[in-house]
Length: 385
Ligand code: HEM
Image 1 (cartoon, protein in one colour):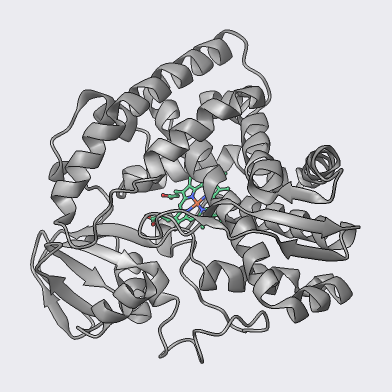
Image 2 (image 1 turned 120 degrees about the horizontal axis):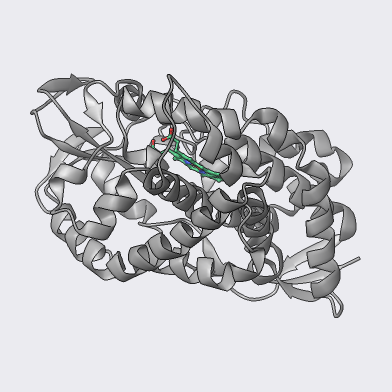
């Protein structure tokens, strides 16, 4: 994957790719410029694909694919419900869940990090926030696997055609999610609780409230994007620490270094490798002219390794400062869940390092398709208390 990105980068930081039939954006300043200008570079790609009913419905509340002014309105609404104070208040619960999960898993000194902790922790936290039964997490995992494990992604195939095939393949899953979440929202309307869904039902901006379908789209994004990315980050960080044993010792001695280590892990093993945008008018990105209607793939993994911005980018360095990685995006769509993801990662890693004086990867990690998601499905560990 990194070799493929390097090959692409050799054609320039922005160029048209004949095989994928899209514009590839690989440089850091160039990707940052695209993300900073939502007036020119739209996130709404729905016009490019024939709308299917379930998708069209789901997209109505999908904030990731919205442009201003609607985006600003929805973001203001959900920011009322999803405040930094609420996230900070989750700390004791995150500690408790992490400890319980490890207690249940590490009896014989062996555990699979993903099954035992990195998957269940974020999904329990987000499900509890939304007031959705955390016990249904096998269902959410199946959805996330279908939506993100596109093992058939072929980097040499035209992107739009591949996208259409993927949409057809995941349509039944989207339909199932819509149905599940609609039941969830109806139940909340008849008995609204003090959880995120309850607050989304009553939040108001400019006299406007969200309708059921918009809440479904938003809750769906939170439920899926809000957990597998954090799962990826935990697994990726433990992998990097295994490759750099000195760093684990450093973090045990000074847990104040953990936030820097997590940011470096996000840069070094970028969970979401690519974002997409569409140029609404003819424009320039850096030196390169792109036509109106151009579809752009922003390779965040490549931007995060741009030697013009990061010295020695192939080195895992937890002291990198500043570390302007783009793993949470940039601009108006900057990840709404970043404070939660950072908190979960910091607490879980701190507990792992405190609890075990030795953590070793016991078998090769099972990697997902890095073109879709930089993450592992299995990470067997041997641990010593
Ligand atoms: C947006 C990555 C965790 C909710 C984004 C974007 C990225 C991203 C790259 C920008 C998408 C774009 O510009 O097209 C990540 C990573 C995470 C993570 C790497 C974990 C390490 C979370 C969590 C939640 C969440 C825990 C929720 C609980 C969202 C939402 C948006 C978003 C709602 C859309 C914001 C908007 O469009 O205004 N995320 N995310 N994410 N993320 Fe995250």
